[in-house]
Amino acid sequence: MHKLIAIGDVHADFGLLWDALRAASCVDAQGRPTAPVVSGLYQVILIGDLVHPKSAEGYARLIGAEAFDPRDEEHLLKAAREQVRELGRLRAYQEAAPHSVHIILGNHDDAVLNPKFVLGTSGGLRHVEFDPGRGGVMLPPHLHEWMSGFVRELRIGDVQFAHVSPLPAHLHYDDLFYADHSSKRWFRETPEYVQMAGLRFGVYGHTQPGGGILFHHDPQGELSFAMIDALQEREYLEVMYDSTETAQLRSVCAVPF
Image 1 (cartoon, helix red, strand yellow):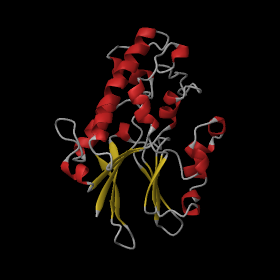
Image 2 (cartoon, rainbow, N blue to C red):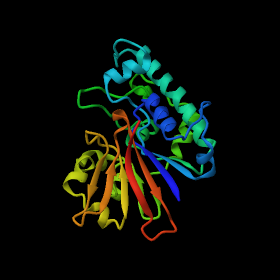
Image 3 (cartoon, helix red, strand yellow):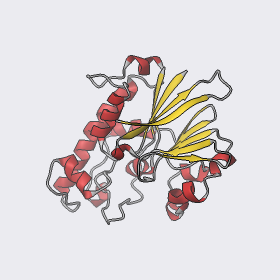
C-alpha cells in the first residue's frame, strides 16, 4: 500500500506548498523529506506550474511590497530572486528523495525554460521576470538543468498524473497548445477522454475549477479523474494505491490543510 500525495499548481506560492507538505507529513522541520517519503511509502507528486504568481497581488506578496509594477525592473528582479530561492529549497527537497518526489512540467515552467511565449493573466499581467528580452533575468543554470528534467506525465499503474489532461497533444506547450482552448475546457466538455485513454483514474491541474478539488464520475458512477488546481484553496489530493489489489485504488479524497 502506498499513499500518493498530489499537490496542485503552485504559482510561486511556496508558503502554501510547504504548508501542504507539512500537513501531509512529507517534510520535517529542516525542510527535508520525512521517513515515509524517503522510504517510498509516500509518493509526492507536484502537478506543475511552480513559477509565476497568479495575480499582481500574488507578486506583491512575493516581493514584500504594497503593489507590484511589472514595468519596474527592480520588482522583476525581486520576483525572480524570491522564486529562485524557493526553487532551490524545493530542488534540495526532491534530490533528497528522487524516487519519491515527482514534479510534472507545467506550461509556465516550460515558458521559463524556453521563453518563446509570453504568458499572462486574464487581467493583462504578463509573466516576464525570467525573460531577459523583456526586462527579466535568466533562470540560473543549475535550476534550468533541474527543471529540464521534470516529467511531462507520471503513470503509476493505470493512474495518470499530468498537468493538463490525458491528451498527448496537451503534454507539449507549443503554438498549437496555446491556440487550442480545449486545454481549459476538456474536463467539462469531453470528460470521456480519460476513459478513452484506457485510464482507471487521472489527476490534472492547469485550470482552477473553483470550490476546491473537482471530482468527476463517469456515467457508471465510477470516479474518473480529479482536477486539483486548488492549492490556493488549501486542499491537496490523497490517493491510497495498492498495486497488489485488482482495484488498485483503495481511496481518493481531497484533504484540507
